[in-house]
Amino acid sequence: MKQSKGESGMEKTKEEKKGLFFRFINGVEVIGNKLPHPFYLFTILIVVAIVLSVIFAGVSVTYESASSKGTGGEIVTVTIKNLLNKETINYVTQNLYSIYYNFSPMMMMGLLMLSIGLAEQVGLFGAFIKRTIAGVRPAFVFAIVSFIAINANTASNAGILGCTAVAAAVFASMGYNPWLGIILAYAAGNAGMSANVFVGNLDVLLSGINESVCSSLGIDTSTVHVLQNWYFMFACAIILTVVFTVVTTKFVRGFIGEAKDLSLIQIGSSDKDLSPLEHKALRNTAIAAVIYLALLVIICIPQNSVFRADDGSLVPNSPLLKSVLTLLFLFFMVTGIAYGRTTGALKDWNSLPKMLAGSINSMVNFMVIALPASLFIYLFNASNIPTALGAAGAEWIKTSGINGFGLIVFIVFFSTFLNLFMTSGSSKWMILAPILIPMLYAIGFSPALTTVAYRIGDSATNAIAPISSDVALIVGLLGKYNTDKSKTPGMGTVFAGCMPYAIATMITELLILGVWWAFNLPLGPGVTMFIK
Image (cartoon, rainbow, N blue to C red; front, top):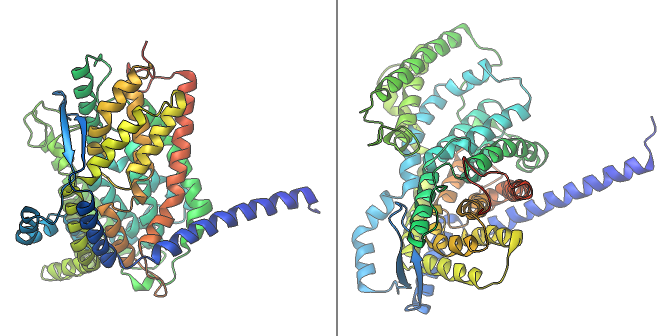
C-alpha cells in the first residue's frame, strides 16, 4: 500500500525528534568524557574546595536545624571554614587511611562484588537466565529490573548498588550489553527515593525531621508519620516502571548500543540450552537458597530476634534492613558455592579463595578513584560550604513571593539544583524543612505535600549528581563490564545514560503530583494535600 505524504512527514518528524534527542545525550557523553579521568577530576575538585574555603572563610548563615528524631529544632549558625588550618591538615594527614577505607561505596561494593563475582564466574547467572527468562521480550526484562531497582532503595544505598551489580551480571548473561543493566538499575534505584511500594529508612528520617519541625512550631503532627507520602510513592513506583521500560526500549538501549564482545568478561557458559549437569546444579542451588532464606525467616520470627528493632518491628528501621548488604553477600556466597561445586566450576575448596581474588580484582580501578573521591567529599563537607549554600537558598525561596502550584514546582527544581552540591537527602531536608514547612503551612499546604515536592527534585537527579560518591563506583563497574575495547567509560557515560531517566522521572512525577493536586487526593493514610 502506498504511504501518504502526511504519514511520511509524521514519521520523518518523529525520526528528527529522536535524532535530536540522541544528539543531545551523545553530546552530554562527549562533553562529560572530555573531563579528566575521574582520579584527576576529584583531585582538581579537592583543590577547588580548598580555594573556595579560603575565599569564603568566615561567611556565616543562620538557620533553624531540624532533628530527625522529632525532638525539636535549634537555631544554628554555620560558618564556612578555611580548610588550610592546622586542625584540618593534621586530621587529614593522620587519618587519610580511615577517610579512604571508611568510604562507604567502596566498602559496600568491595564486599558485595566478592560474592556476586563468585556466582558470575561459576556460571550461576547465565544458567539461571537460560532456565527462567531467556527468550522473553526485552521489554519484560527491562520492566522487571526497573521495578526491582526502584524498590531496592528500601535498603538505602546498599540496595541500589547491589541491584546495579546484579543487573550488570544478569544482562551480560542474557547477551545484552551489561552497561544497559548498570545504567537502568542505577537510575531506577535513585529515582526510587520518591517512588516505592515499601517503606524505607529515608521515610523514617524525613518523617522524624517533619515531626521535629512541626512540634517545635505548634503544627499538628497527627498526619506526620512514615506513611505520609506512601500513596503517592506507590503510584509513582508502578507508573515509573512503565515509563522506564519505554525510555530504555526507545532511547537508552539505542544510545548504549549492543554488546560487542562478551568474551571480554566472564559470564559462564554461553550454550543456549542447559545441560543435565546444569539442571542438577540449579536444583541444588535452589535447595541451598531455600534453606538459607528459611533460616533467615526463622531467626526473624522471635519478638526478641537480633534482626528486630527495640520495639519488635522488622520494618522500616531495623537491624534486618541495616544488614541487607551482609545478607546479600552470604546469599550469593551460598548459592555460588552450591552451583559451582555441583558443576565442577569450583573444583575444590582451594579454588574458592582464588575465585574470590578474581572477583575483587575487578574493583581495583574503583579503589584508585576512591582515594581522591573520598578526600574531596570529606573536605567539601568539612568546609561547611554545602550546608551554608542550602540554608541561604532556602531563605531566598522564603522571600521570593512565588505561590500556588508554581511554588511546589519551584521547590522541586531548587532541590534538583541543590543536588549539585549536597547529596545526602536527610541532611538537605534538615536544612530546608524548618523554613519550607512553616512557610507552606501558612498558605494551606500540608507538611506531607512540601516533603513530596522536595523528594521529587532530590530523587530525579540523584543519578546525575556530579559529586555523588557513587558515580566513581558506577564508572568502575562500567569498566569491569566493558565489551568494547574501543570505548573507555567515564563520568560522561554515566550522566548521558542516566539523563533520559532523570528527565522522565521529573516530568512523570510532576504530572502525577499535578493529578494529585487537581483532585486533592490523599498523599498517605489520613494525610491530605492541603490543611483543612
